[in-house]
Length: 236
Image 1 (cartoon, rainbow, N blue to C red):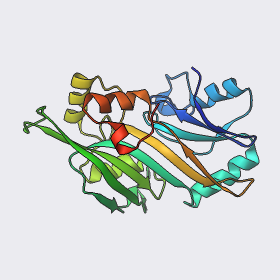
Image 2: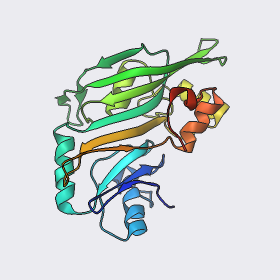
Image 3: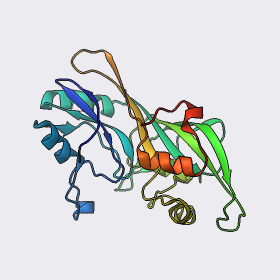
Image 4: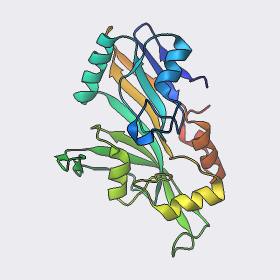
């Protein structure tokens, strides 16, 4: 597998991570043998380190450092919440035009963490397919801006709002996931890391990295009648 490069210089490299690819080895998926870190290292023939993480089933921008000092500097920006991230997701129900949630999220040890997620609705669609007790099913295409970086923050916040992400097996809604699998062949989670903006750790200039939607996401949108051209969303 050749990973698509979005940006590269002598300090950093960013890829458009495919859906269903782990960033690195993890005890929660001990059976996996293919990882973005190893693939990119072998592809470039150099040492690389992920500056942040995105979920296995999430596609989109994933940034790597090419030396340890740069890795440290970029990770500090994530820790200080000075990065700017934008995601796209297909979610259950009709979202309001825009909104936010700042409900705290629990860590593994039960401690609560502040969390803030802003969003806006790009498009709403109703499908003539019965799910549960409703004769039709409604969905929204969301643009999401997580201002903190908690574990599964977008997925958990939207679950709290009952606007579950389609394809999310952990925090999502099984009946809607099953319908998308049966009717549209869904095999991943419809969450995409669309862009990442940081301050370049060496030049100190703003660096904006954007990722086109992966084909899996695009194909589902097309099957349900959503044209990304109408939304000015760039894609492959």
